[in-house]
Image (cartoon, rainbow, N blue to C red; front, side):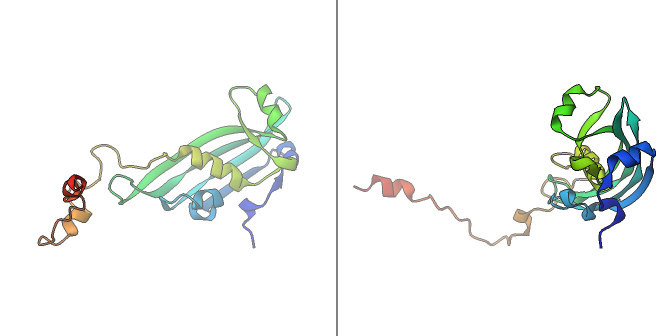
Length: 172
């Protein structure tokens, strides 16, 4: 059974009624976010308020929460706070985007339907860094504190695969 926030809803009906929908969602339950390798968990909560602006259906999305990611510098877990507020114009076609005001972000609502999950996913994806890392001087362990090289036995023989290459090239 699908979650209520993942069900496509009628945009015109919600905007005419000025509906407000609260949500509390685990990030792993959102399909577009679950494909991000470095995302290890987290949740967001907030509200989507539907309405009209200049005759267009709009959604005012407010969210806050945290994402648990893997730092790509030290490969250790980190928590990234998420907070956002955006006003989205819900458009039937991409051609309508050219007529939007700068204050509105465009989002397609095919056949006049959209789910709260799509609105949440879009805002969270825009909030996540391309390469998650602890801040400079943050919690990353110092270089060499734990690395694959430090795990290797000290009596291991160093491999030099090209050591005799010069000899082979000089043979005729």
